[in-house]
Image 1 (cartoon, rainbow, N blue to C red):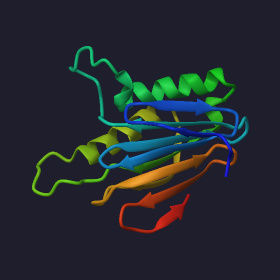
Image 2 (image 1 turned 180 degrees about the vertical axis):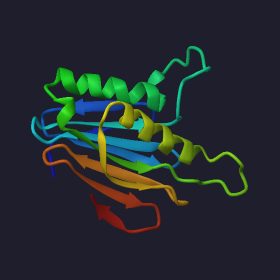
Image 3 (image 1 turned 90 degrees about the vertical axis):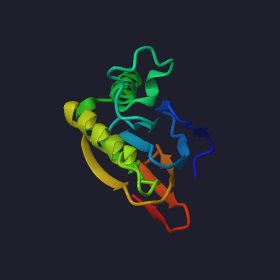
Image 4 (image 1 turned 90 degrees about the horizontal axis):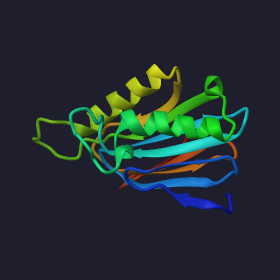
Length: 158
């Protein structure tokens, strides 16, 4: 386990090239987006809350949105030495937590994250999304592995 541990809260992203453990606790309908350049050892984690910022005006925190957080995180990774052509993604979360609600914000978040990654030609190499339970993620940027813990469920490594 890396000595340096950094928490990534809702609407935040963090990028590191120093082998930190990046964690997001309590992903419900939110999506944790782990980006990893295995060649240059640069990683980033975003905690995306909403699908897109269109029509929302000045939101105060643009990184809550997939269409703002993912491009910003990729740009920050490049500044730390990442090569976008070597970056892959692992995505987690996007749960549907509310029965009987017609809007599934979790699925909208997942769809938007996938679209933003597609636009940037970043391949998704692992995912655990949907269902009806929250998750927490721990992203080891030394080797690109992600441990996912489910609320009331098992823990898996990707």
